[in-house]
Image 1 (cartoon, helix red, strand yellow):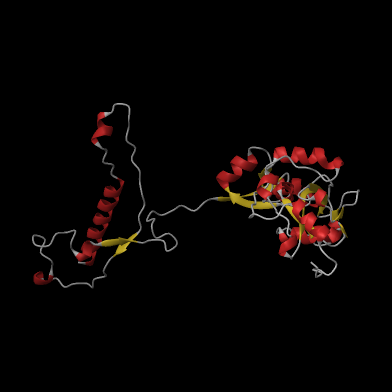
Image 2 (cartoon, one colour):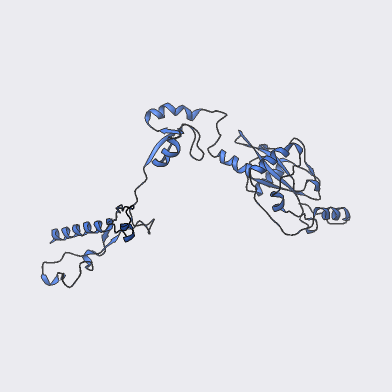
Length: 318
């Protein structure tokens, strides 16, 4: 009886596989002479829905084939074994074949020359092996290109993410807020604080290089005008970062309007004439984020209020 049940189960599984791989073309496809049907095989892992104990050979306990249909018999009901990570997909997914490759040049986000990395076979062939950016990590190639890992060339990037960092900083715009009532001269720590407000972290003031000409204020002629500073990344790469000067105050009476939407969409006006060409070229090449604010007093109105303010006005420090 046990052998008989095993044979029945095997025949049922074969019938199940044939039914899942069968293709039933539509009448439209059959009528078209230029279209062809291609069979597709899907693999399913099944298990018995309800485990039954071995039955005796008594006829009254055996299911009647005339009364009970084979598909409704609990012995022939199976369920798919679904991957818990993907409950919607019942097909068995093949594992991606990984290969080891050794890099011949710096690849952004992957590694440096001489480093052995593991990647999916198809992706590695199309993006790294064909352009000759990497080679198969055979023992001969590892020994041949191992010296690349220890070379310290100034022309090589300092990090695998430095190219992406330079692109982000080049397209960024740092809004530098300076006091509208107290005299000031722009220093590196002003830029460092302003960059921190824009989610750009500078570890020290030494990596920030200001323009050779000093920028002092408050001066409403410099309001919403551009300049750039030079940042040093990993003591090697240098990148220029745009900055926009804006006078701020905590007192509502002396707040200047900040119409960022209008300023950022127009060609930039540089504070220093020596930086005008680079800022114009950068504006034509990249796009700055848009900002907009509500209606506020104009710079001329704020300048008139500052001149007419009495000495008894409360001092507000920022």
